Length: 121
Image (cartoon, rainbow, N blue to C red; front, side, top):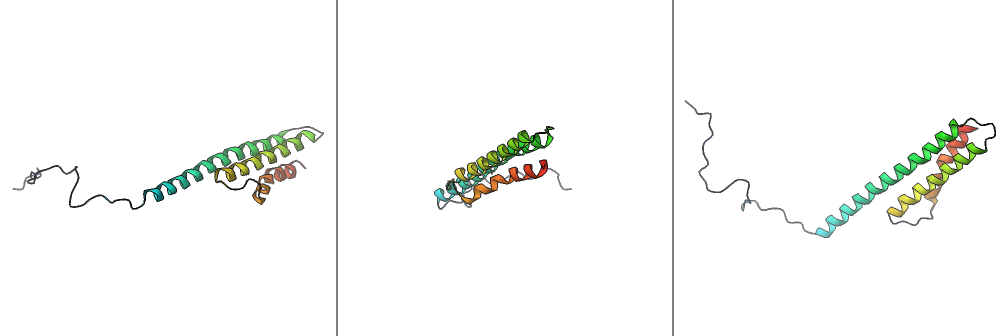
């Protein structure tokens, strides 16, 4: 009759310790791993920062659309402010990645203004 209890280990030592027959992989270039980690951290940081700032810009566009005033100066002002905040979001992303702040990419930050002005027309 077979026993349900596993057989006792006959070799000496513990299985959770270092196995000399299968050594750990040695990292060839630790600075390469540091560079990869820094790149990932930079992308995560810029994604979070730009997304958060663009939410503020989107909130300003929604506020300009929800305003019920006959003179549209307040609505236009909020839409322009949304564009300024959008430009700041793009500049923040460029700055985190170490790129030049003045670039054609800043025009992408004016999209909230265009959307806001189109919605309040």
